[in-house]
Length: 186
Image (tube, rainbow, N blue to C red; front, side):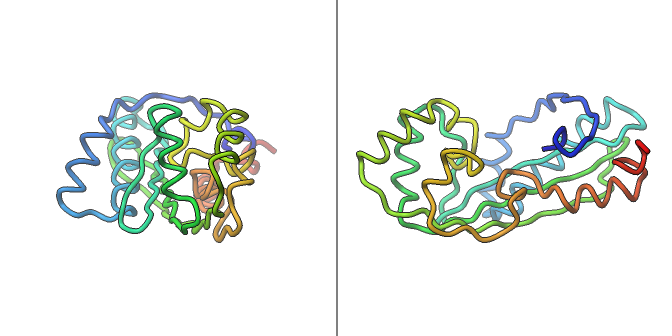
């Protein structure tokens, strides 16, 4: 998304143990929004301490359905189980973005998309997974709405970019206010 929006950036792994952080936050009964924001902040701050003077963007998404949180599926069997659990139900996809500099959070935004997955049978699910392949394991919902995953839904509410995993529009406004974006290229 950042590349498509014309931004130059470098991807730097943060080295955050997301599973451990989630376990700890869930023990404290943190909400999906709190988890997404905490993880995005931890990523941004950790990298910003290694890149002094640089604006660092961290992001994370969390999927919640009827009180249960879902992670990226580990394999196609886990993706199948997750999609079966979400079929015919509405779920919330919470995406959070944090900008940090020199180890401190400067700004953040969090947004929520509400998606209703249509009911489907085993045959449809088999076909979807066969065509989508292991790419479904790269997203928290086991789908990419911008591709074949669109076939899974009968209703989508919320910002498109948020659902793809990043509240892009508020981020672009923040960056433009700091001289980063198309204005700085002209």
